[in-house]
Image (tube, rainbow, N blue to C red; front, side, top):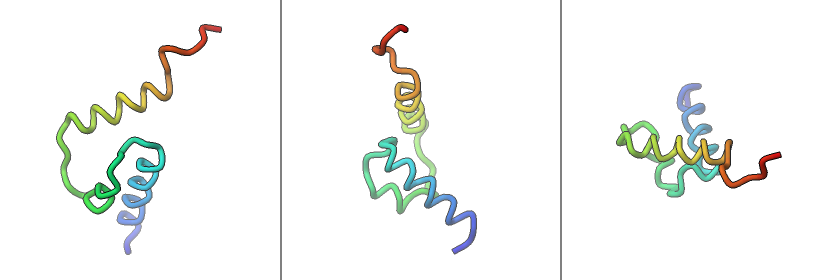
Length: 58
């Protein structure tokens, strides 16, 4: 397995562990193009995790 392939698999596993992707079958399809809405959904989930709107103000 080449370095880029290892990195791609590592990123996929990290996304699965973080809950950014919910279906483990995506790990076998990491090289396939995805619709823009999938990328946007993942980014919005990430933003919500990094900056929750319902947290304390202080």
